[in-house]
Amino acid sequence: MIEMLTLEEKKKLIRRRLYRHGSVQVALGLLSLAFSLFAVIQVEVFVGSILLMNGVSTAWYVFYAFREGDSPWQGTLMAVVALAAGLVFLFHPISNVIIMSFFLSTYFLVGGLMRVTEGLRIRTIRGWYWILISGLISIIFSLALFGGVSAARPMLKIMFAVNMISWGCGFIAVASSN
Image (cartoon, rainbow, N blue to C red; front, side, top):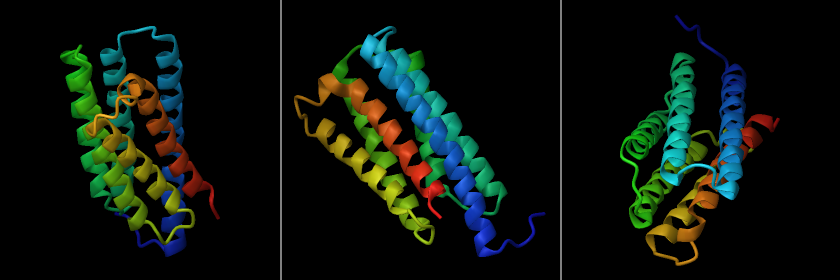
């Protein structure tokens, strides 16, 4: 049974979770960026692997959040979406860039909306707006892909990596603020 925590203790637990999760997201984003620049493996399988790892990381974050008495339902939805998208990319490699653009733009949109919601939910914590900003960046990427911005499609891998790094930096920034 979890004993009642003070507001400061709860904030400390949230910051610790955000820092860990953000660090994993930044690492995955950097890994994605490195591989996108060298084009070492097939895009669909690589993106699927990153999405799957992101889903596992998000599920880990959510598990501990629930365990500590928090209720990050938007994180739960994001974990499910990332895991499902990752499995689709891994087990049904899609060679059509338009279909991949659609899946990634949907992922960016859902992730962006969830991060905006999370940022607003934790606005009692200093630096909360960094998560909000990372969500807005993700939504902008989504709209660029949905809108068919011709420059966006060739940059899918880089947009994916920047999105992951943005997400992780947002979490780390909130966790680091005093």
